[in-house]
Length: 449
Image (cartoon, rainbow, N blue to C red):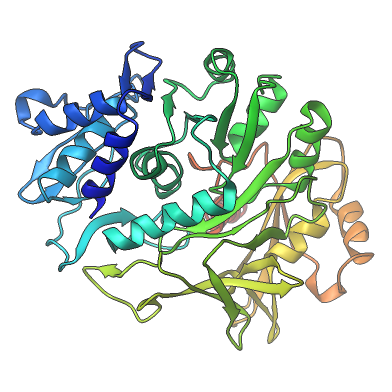
Protein backbone atom coordinates (compact mmCIF):
# COMPACT_ATOMS: atom_id res chain seq x y z
CA UNK A 1 0.00 0.00 0.00
CA UNK A 2 2.77 2.46 1.00
CA UNK A 3 4.99 1.60 -1.96
CA UNK A 4 2.10 1.92 -4.40
CA UNK A 5 1.31 5.39 -3.05
CA UNK A 6 4.97 6.35 -3.40
CA UNK A 7 5.12 5.14 -7.02
CA UNK A 8 2.10 7.29 -7.79
CA UNK A 9 3.76 10.38 -6.26
CA UNK A 10 7.03 9.61 -8.08
CA UNK A 11 5.24 9.33 -11.41
CA UNK A 12 3.29 12.56 -10.95
CA UNK A 13 6.35 14.61 -9.92
CA UNK A 14 9.11 12.72 -11.71
CA UNK A 15 11.21 15.72 -12.76
CA UNK A 16 10.83 17.77 -9.55
CA UNK A 17 13.37 17.92 -6.74
CA UNK A 18 12.61 15.41 -3.98
CA UNK A 19 15.72 15.10 -1.82
CA UNK A 20 18.77 17.33 -1.32
CA UNK A 21 21.63 16.09 0.85
CA UNK A 22 23.68 19.10 1.96
CA UNK A 23 26.55 16.99 3.31
CA UNK A 24 27.36 15.50 -0.09
CA UNK A 25 25.70 18.11 -2.27
CA UNK A 26 23.74 15.41 -4.09
CA UNK A 27 20.18 15.95 -5.30
CA UNK A 28 17.51 13.48 -6.36
CA UNK A 29 14.38 14.20 -8.34
CA UNK A 30 11.36 12.07 -7.54
CA UNK A 31 12.14 9.98 -10.61
CA UNK A 32 15.76 9.48 -9.57
CA UNK A 33 14.77 8.60 -6.03
CA UNK A 34 12.29 6.08 -7.39
CA UNK A 35 14.99 4.51 -9.55
CA UNK A 36 17.40 4.33 -6.60
CA UNK A 37 14.83 2.49 -4.50
CA UNK A 38 14.20 0.04 -7.34
CA UNK A 39 17.81 -1.13 -7.53
CA UNK A 40 18.78 -0.97 -3.84
CA UNK A 41 18.82 -4.41 -2.26
CA UNK A 42 20.38 -3.75 1.13
CA UNK A 43 23.19 -6.20 0.50
CA UNK A 44 25.85 -6.22 3.23
CA UNK A 45 28.46 -4.96 0.78
CA UNK A 46 26.47 -1.75 0.33
CA UNK A 47 25.93 -1.09 4.02
CA UNK A 48 28.43 0.94 6.04
CA UNK A 49 28.78 -0.07 9.65
CA UNK A 50 27.96 2.71 12.11
CA UNK A 51 31.05 3.81 14.05
CA UNK A 52 30.82 4.19 17.78
CA UNK A 53 32.03 6.86 20.15
CA UNK A 54 31.68 10.61 20.31
CA UNK A 55 33.02 11.14 16.81
CA UNK A 56 30.48 8.88 15.14
CA UNK A 57 28.76 10.82 12.35
CA UNK A 58 25.02 10.87 11.90
CA UNK A 59 25.43 9.69 8.32
CA UNK A 60 25.47 5.92 8.66
CA UNK A 61 24.12 4.12 5.62
CA UNK A 62 20.61 2.98 5.40
CA UNK A 63 19.39 -0.62 5.32
CA UNK A 64 20.33 -3.62 7.39
CA UNK A 65 18.32 -6.80 6.93
CA UNK A 66 17.38 -9.43 9.47
CA UNK A 67 15.30 -12.05 7.67
CA UNK A 68 12.14 -10.07 6.81
CA UNK A 69 12.85 -7.18 9.16
CA UNK A 70 14.63 -4.09 7.77
CA UNK A 71 16.32 -1.37 9.82
CA UNK A 72 16.82 1.94 8.01
CA UNK A 73 19.09 4.06 10.20
CA UNK A 74 21.14 7.21 10.34
CA UNK A 75 20.60 10.68 8.91
CA UNK A 76 21.35 10.27 5.23
CA UNK A 77 19.76 9.69 1.81
CA UNK A 78 20.38 5.96 2.34
CA UNK A 79 17.75 5.98 5.08
CA UNK A 80 15.12 7.08 2.54
CA UNK A 81 16.38 4.86 -0.27
CA UNK A 82 16.66 1.87 2.06
CA UNK A 83 13.11 2.48 3.29
CA UNK A 84 11.81 2.49 -0.29
CA UNK A 85 13.65 -0.75 -0.99
CA UNK A 86 12.19 -2.34 2.14
CA UNK A 87 8.68 -1.31 1.06
CA UNK A 88 9.33 -2.73 -2.41
CA UNK A 89 10.58 -6.05 -0.99
CA UNK A 90 7.67 -6.35 1.44
CA UNK A 91 9.83 -6.19 4.57
CA UNK A 92 8.65 -5.08 7.97
CA UNK A 93 10.44 -1.81 8.76
CA UNK A 94 11.86 -0.87 12.15
CA UNK A 95 13.88 2.39 11.92
CA UNK A 96 16.83 2.72 14.30
CA UNK A 97 19.05 5.44 15.65
CA UNK A 98 22.73 5.03 14.62
CA UNK A 99 23.77 3.60 17.98
CA UNK A 100 20.61 1.54 18.55
CA UNK A 101 20.77 -2.26 18.44
CA UNK A 102 18.08 -4.07 16.43
CA UNK A 103 15.36 -5.44 18.73
CA UNK A 104 15.26 -9.22 18.90
CA UNK A 105 11.55 -9.80 18.32
CA UNK A 106 9.45 -11.99 16.03
CA UNK A 107 7.75 -10.42 13.05
CA UNK A 108 4.39 -8.85 13.89
CA UNK A 109 1.30 -10.40 12.30
CA UNK A 110 -0.06 -9.13 9.01
CA UNK A 111 -1.15 -6.56 8.03
CA UNK A 112 1.46 -4.86 10.27
CA UNK A 113 4.37 -3.49 8.22
CA UNK A 114 6.17 -1.14 10.63
CA UNK A 115 7.58 -1.11 14.16
CA UNK A 116 8.26 2.07 16.13
CA UNK A 117 10.31 2.26 19.32
CA UNK A 118 8.81 4.33 22.13
CA UNK A 119 10.99 7.03 23.70
CA UNK A 120 10.97 5.28 27.11
CA UNK A 121 10.53 8.51 29.10
CA UNK A 122 7.81 6.89 31.22
CA UNK A 123 9.22 3.37 31.48
CA UNK A 124 11.06 0.67 29.54
CA UNK A 125 11.12 1.11 25.74
CA UNK A 126 8.43 -0.77 23.85
CA UNK A 127 7.68 -1.51 20.22
CA UNK A 128 4.46 -0.43 18.56
CA UNK A 129 3.26 -2.23 15.42
CA UNK A 130 1.53 -0.29 12.62
CA UNK A 131 -0.24 -1.14 9.40
CA UNK A 132 0.47 0.84 6.24
CA UNK A 133 -2.96 2.45 6.48
CA UNK A 134 -2.24 3.70 10.00
CA UNK A 135 1.07 5.28 8.98
CA UNK A 136 -0.57 6.90 5.97
CA UNK A 137 -3.42 8.24 8.14
CA UNK A 138 -0.95 9.96 10.47
CA UNK A 139 0.78 11.64 7.52
CA UNK A 140 -2.60 12.74 6.13
CA UNK A 141 -3.57 14.24 9.50
CA UNK A 142 -0.26 16.13 9.70
CA UNK A 143 -0.57 17.52 6.17
CA UNK A 144 -4.19 18.55 6.70
CA UNK A 145 -3.59 20.14 10.12
CA UNK A 146 -0.22 21.82 9.65
CA UNK A 147 -0.53 22.75 5.99
CA UNK A 148 2.83 21.36 4.80
CA UNK A 149 3.46 22.52 1.22
CA UNK A 150 5.66 21.30 -1.66
CA UNK A 151 6.97 24.84 -2.18
CA UNK A 152 8.07 24.98 1.47
CA UNK A 153 10.49 22.03 1.65
CA UNK A 154 11.21 20.44 5.01
CA UNK A 155 14.63 21.24 6.47
CA UNK A 156 15.59 17.92 8.01
CA UNK A 157 17.54 18.28 11.26
CA UNK A 158 15.61 15.99 13.61
CA UNK A 159 16.02 12.22 13.65
CA UNK A 160 14.48 10.41 10.68
CA UNK A 161 14.14 7.25 12.77
CA UNK A 162 12.18 8.79 15.61
CA UNK A 163 8.40 8.84 15.27
CA UNK A 164 8.36 12.66 15.04
CA UNK A 165 10.84 12.88 12.18
CA UNK A 166 9.49 9.83 10.39
CA UNK A 167 5.95 11.21 10.35
CA UNK A 168 6.85 14.88 9.73
CA UNK A 169 9.73 14.52 7.28
CA UNK A 170 9.92 11.07 5.69
CA UNK A 171 6.26 10.22 5.12
CA UNK A 172 5.35 13.70 3.76
CA UNK A 173 8.19 13.28 1.24
CA UNK A 174 7.26 9.79 0.11
CA UNK A 175 3.46 9.89 0.38
CA UNK A 176 2.70 13.56 -0.37
CA UNK A 177 5.63 14.90 -2.38
CA UNK A 178 6.97 17.39 0.20
CA UNK A 179 10.69 17.84 -0.64
CA UNK A 180 13.26 17.13 2.06
CA UNK A 181 16.60 18.91 2.58
CA UNK A 182 18.90 16.90 4.85
CA UNK A 183 21.11 19.05 7.09
CA UNK A 184 24.22 17.27 8.42
CA UNK A 185 24.08 18.99 11.83
CA UNK A 186 21.48 20.77 13.98
CA UNK A 187 24.07 23.31 15.14
CA UNK A 188 22.95 26.93 14.60
CA UNK A 189 25.51 27.79 11.92
CA UNK A 190 24.66 24.65 9.91
CA UNK A 191 20.95 25.45 10.05
CA UNK A 192 21.62 29.09 9.11
CA UNK A 193 23.62 28.02 6.04
CA UNK A 194 21.07 25.40 5.04
CA UNK A 195 18.22 27.89 5.06
CA UNK A 196 20.01 30.44 2.87
CA UNK A 197 19.56 28.56 -0.37
CA UNK A 198 15.77 28.40 -0.21
CA UNK A 199 13.09 31.03 -0.70
CA UNK A 200 10.83 29.39 1.89
CA UNK A 201 11.17 26.41 4.21
CA UNK A 202 9.42 24.43 6.93
CA UNK A 203 11.56 23.79 9.99
CA UNK A 204 10.65 21.15 12.57
CA UNK A 205 12.66 21.03 15.78
CA UNK A 206 12.49 20.28 19.49
CA UNK A 207 12.44 22.97 22.22
CA UNK A 208 16.14 22.55 23.02
CA UNK A 209 17.05 23.19 19.38
CA UNK A 210 14.70 26.14 19.04
CA UNK A 211 16.27 27.70 22.15
CA UNK A 212 19.79 27.18 20.75
CA UNK A 213 18.84 28.62 17.34
CA UNK A 214 17.11 31.57 18.98
CA UNK A 215 20.00 32.39 21.30
CA UNK A 216 22.48 32.17 18.38
CA UNK A 217 20.22 34.34 16.19
CA UNK A 218 20.24 31.56 13.61
CA UNK A 219 16.53 31.51 12.73
CA UNK A 220 16.30 32.52 9.08
CA UNK A 221 13.60 34.94 7.89
CA UNK A 222 12.61 32.46 5.16
CA UNK A 223 11.23 29.97 7.71
CA UNK A 224 7.54 30.01 6.81
CA UNK A 225 6.35 27.22 9.09
CA UNK A 226 8.01 26.47 12.45
CA UNK A 227 7.07 23.35 14.40
CA UNK A 228 8.17 22.23 17.86
CA UNK A 229 7.50 18.77 19.29
CA UNK A 230 9.18 15.97 21.20
CA UNK A 231 8.98 17.78 24.56
CA UNK A 232 6.88 20.56 26.15
CA UNK A 233 7.47 23.94 24.48
CA UNK A 234 7.80 26.71 27.11
CA UNK A 235 5.45 29.58 26.31
CA UNK A 236 8.27 31.99 27.27
CA UNK A 237 10.51 30.60 24.52
CA UNK A 238 7.66 30.80 22.03
CA UNK A 239 7.06 34.44 22.98
CA UNK A 240 10.78 35.29 22.75
CA UNK A 241 11.11 33.83 19.25
CA UNK A 242 8.00 35.69 18.12
CA UNK A 243 9.30 38.98 19.53
CA UNK A 244 12.72 38.56 17.89
CA UNK A 245 11.70 37.09 14.54
CA UNK A 246 7.97 37.58 14.12
CA UNK A 247 7.85 33.80 13.79
CA UNK A 248 5.19 31.70 15.48
CA UNK A 249 6.42 28.40 16.91
CA UNK A 250 3.58 25.92 16.49
CA UNK A 251 3.43 23.48 19.39
CA UNK A 252 2.83 19.88 18.28
CA UNK A 253 1.80 17.21 20.77
CA UNK A 254 1.82 13.55 19.82
CA UNK A 255 2.77 10.06 20.88
CA UNK A 256 4.59 7.14 19.27
CA UNK A 257 1.51 5.00 19.80
CA UNK A 258 -0.94 7.16 17.89
CA UNK A 259 0.93 9.86 15.97
CA UNK A 260 -0.26 13.44 16.15
CA UNK A 261 -2.74 14.35 18.89
CA UNK A 262 -2.95 18.16 19.07
CA UNK A 263 -1.46 21.16 17.28
CA UNK A 264 -1.44 24.87 17.97
CA UNK A 265 -2.36 26.42 14.62
CA UNK A 266 -2.90 29.93 16.01
CA UNK A 267 -0.88 32.90 14.73
CA UNK A 268 0.15 34.34 18.08
CA UNK A 269 2.18 32.87 20.97
CA UNK A 270 0.50 30.96 23.76
CA UNK A 271 0.34 32.47 27.23
CA UNK A 272 -0.07 29.11 29.01
CA UNK A 273 2.52 26.31 28.96
CA UNK A 274 -0.22 23.77 29.63
CA UNK A 275 -2.09 24.51 26.40
CA UNK A 276 -0.81 22.27 23.59
CA UNK A 277 -3.29 23.26 20.88
CA UNK A 278 -6.46 21.84 19.40
CA UNK A 279 -7.09 18.23 18.33
CA UNK A 280 -5.48 17.26 15.02
CA UNK A 281 -7.75 16.81 12.03
CA UNK A 282 -9.51 13.43 12.12
CA UNK A 283 -8.41 12.87 15.74
CA UNK A 284 -11.07 12.54 18.43
CA UNK A 285 -10.23 13.14 22.09
CA UNK A 286 -12.03 12.38 25.33
CA UNK A 287 -11.23 12.01 29.03
CA UNK A 288 -11.53 9.05 31.37
CA UNK A 289 -13.12 9.41 34.81
CA UNK A 290 -9.61 9.91 36.19
CA UNK A 291 -8.98 12.75 33.71
CA UNK A 292 -6.58 10.88 31.41
CA UNK A 293 -6.66 11.63 27.69
CA UNK A 294 -8.06 9.02 25.28
CA UNK A 295 -7.14 9.25 21.59
CA UNK A 296 -9.20 7.75 18.78
CA UNK A 297 -8.19 7.93 15.11
CA UNK A 298 -7.24 5.85 12.09
CA UNK A 299 -3.58 6.63 12.90
CA UNK A 300 -3.57 4.77 16.24
CA UNK A 301 -1.13 1.84 16.16
CA UNK A 302 -2.29 -1.74 15.92
CA UNK A 303 -0.71 -3.11 19.11
CA UNK A 304 2.33 -3.15 21.36
CA UNK A 305 4.66 -5.87 20.14
CA UNK A 306 5.35 -8.58 21.13
CA UNK A 307 3.35 -8.00 24.33
CA UNK A 308 -0.04 -6.36 23.64
CA UNK A 309 -1.74 -4.14 26.23
CA UNK A 310 -5.38 -3.16 26.53
CA UNK A 311 -4.54 0.57 26.38
CA UNK A 312 -3.69 0.30 22.68
CA UNK A 313 -5.65 -1.16 19.79
CA UNK A 314 -8.82 -1.00 17.72
CA UNK A 315 -8.23 2.65 16.86
CA UNK A 316 -7.90 3.75 20.50
CA UNK A 317 -4.94 4.75 22.66
CA UNK A 318 -5.41 5.37 26.36
CA UNK A 319 -2.67 7.76 27.45
CA UNK A 320 -1.47 8.39 30.99
CA UNK A 321 -1.56 12.15 30.37
CA UNK A 322 -3.87 14.10 32.67
CA UNK A 323 -5.67 16.72 30.60
CA UNK A 324 -8.53 19.17 30.32
CA UNK A 325 -10.54 19.88 27.16
CA UNK A 326 -11.69 23.49 27.19
CA UNK A 327 -13.27 25.35 24.27
CA UNK A 328 -11.58 23.16 21.69
CA UNK A 329 -8.14 23.39 23.32
CA UNK A 330 -6.14 20.64 25.03
CA UNK A 331 -4.43 21.49 28.31
CA UNK A 332 -2.04 18.98 29.84
CA UNK A 333 -1.85 18.63 33.61
CA UNK A 334 0.97 16.12 33.96
CA UNK A 335 0.96 12.32 33.99
CA UNK A 336 -1.12 10.12 36.21
CA UNK A 337 1.99 8.04 36.94
CA UNK A 338 3.86 11.19 38.08
CA UNK A 339 1.29 12.23 40.67
CA UNK A 340 2.64 12.63 44.19
CA UNK A 341 0.83 11.17 47.19
CA UNK A 342 0.96 13.68 50.05
CA UNK A 343 -0.85 12.35 53.12
CA UNK A 344 -3.55 10.75 50.98
CA UNK A 345 -3.94 13.70 48.64
CA UNK A 346 -2.69 13.71 45.06
CA UNK A 347 -0.82 16.56 43.42
CA UNK A 348 0.54 16.85 39.91
CA UNK A 349 4.20 17.96 39.85
CA UNK A 350 3.48 19.91 36.67
CA UNK A 351 1.23 22.35 38.58
CA UNK A 352 4.01 23.10 41.08
CA UNK A 353 6.55 23.48 38.27
CA UNK A 354 4.34 25.98 36.45
CA UNK A 355 4.07 28.08 39.60
CA UNK A 356 7.82 27.89 40.32
CA UNK A 357 8.81 28.90 36.80
CA UNK A 358 7.07 32.24 37.29
CA UNK A 359 9.93 33.21 39.63
CA UNK A 360 12.45 35.37 37.71
CA UNK A 361 15.45 33.76 39.46
CA UNK A 362 14.72 30.30 38.01
CA UNK A 363 15.42 29.13 34.49
CA UNK A 364 14.25 25.53 34.95
CA UNK A 365 12.80 23.22 37.54
CA UNK A 366 11.61 19.65 37.99
CA UNK A 367 9.34 18.40 40.77
CA UNK A 368 8.93 14.78 41.84
CA UNK A 369 8.01 12.66 44.83
CA UNK A 370 10.52 10.77 46.96
CA UNK A 371 10.00 8.28 49.79
CA UNK A 372 9.33 9.89 53.17
CA UNK A 373 11.84 9.58 55.97
CA UNK A 374 9.50 7.51 58.14
CA UNK A 375 9.09 4.82 55.51
CA UNK A 376 5.34 5.34 55.19
CA UNK A 377 3.47 5.52 51.91
CA UNK A 378 3.36 9.31 51.81
CA UNK A 379 5.77 11.05 49.47
CA UNK A 380 7.99 14.02 50.11
CA UNK A 381 7.78 16.68 47.39
CA UNK A 382 11.22 17.45 45.98
CA UNK A 383 11.97 20.53 43.87
CA UNK A 384 15.04 20.33 41.68
CA UNK A 385 15.77 23.88 40.49
CA UNK A 386 18.20 25.77 38.24
CA UNK A 387 18.77 29.35 39.45
CA UNK A 388 20.11 32.13 37.24
CA UNK A 389 20.17 34.64 40.10
CA UNK A 390 20.72 34.32 43.87
CA UNK A 391 17.63 32.98 45.62
CA UNK A 392 17.00 31.05 48.84
CA UNK A 393 14.73 28.13 49.63
CA UNK A 394 12.71 30.31 51.99
CA UNK A 395 12.19 32.93 49.30
CA UNK A 396 10.95 30.28 46.87
CA UNK A 397 8.61 28.85 49.51
CA UNK A 398 7.10 32.27 50.20
CA UNK A 399 6.72 32.84 46.47
CA UNK A 400 4.86 29.53 46.09
CA UNK A 401 2.59 30.17 49.07
CA UNK A 402 0.99 32.98 47.09
CA UNK A 403 0.18 30.58 44.23
CA UNK A 404 -0.47 27.06 45.55
CA UNK A 405 -1.88 25.49 48.75
CA UNK A 406 0.61 25.10 51.58
CA UNK A 407 0.34 21.29 51.57
CA UNK A 408 1.78 21.30 48.03
CA UNK A 409 4.99 23.12 49.04
CA UNK A 410 8.18 21.12 48.36
CA UNK A 411 9.88 19.97 51.55
CA UNK A 412 13.20 19.20 49.88
CA UNK A 413 15.11 21.57 47.59
CA UNK A 414 17.97 20.60 45.30
CA UNK A 415 19.85 23.32 43.45
CA UNK A 416 21.61 22.05 40.30
CA UNK A 417 23.51 23.75 37.48
CA UNK A 418 21.29 22.35 34.74
CA UNK A 419 18.64 19.73 34.03
CA UNK A 420 20.08 17.33 31.48
CA UNK A 421 17.64 16.32 28.76
CA UNK A 422 17.72 13.61 26.12
CA UNK A 423 18.12 14.25 22.37
CA UNK A 424 14.43 15.21 22.13
CA UNK A 425 14.71 17.71 24.93
CA UNK A 426 12.74 15.56 27.35
CA UNK A 427 13.66 15.44 31.03
CA UNK A 428 13.00 12.19 32.86
CA UNK A 429 11.55 12.51 36.35
CA UNK A 430 12.53 8.91 37.06
CA UNK A 431 16.19 9.60 36.20
CA UNK A 432 16.36 12.72 38.35
CA UNK A 433 14.59 10.96 41.22
CA UNK A 434 17.28 8.26 41.11
CA UNK A 435 20.01 10.91 41.05
CA UNK A 436 18.46 12.72 43.99
CA UNK A 437 18.16 9.55 46.09
CA UNK A 438 21.74 8.56 45.26
CA UNK A 439 23.02 12.02 46.25
CA UNK A 440 20.97 11.92 49.44
CA UNK A 441 22.45 8.53 50.32
CA UNK A 442 25.98 9.90 49.83
CA UNK A 443 25.26 12.82 52.14
CA UNK A 444 23.82 10.58 54.84
CA UNK A 445 26.79 8.22 54.57
CA UNK A 446 29.23 11.10 55.06
CA UNK A 447 27.31 12.25 58.15
CA UNK A 448 27.58 8.81 59.71
CA UNK A 449 31.36 8.69 59.30
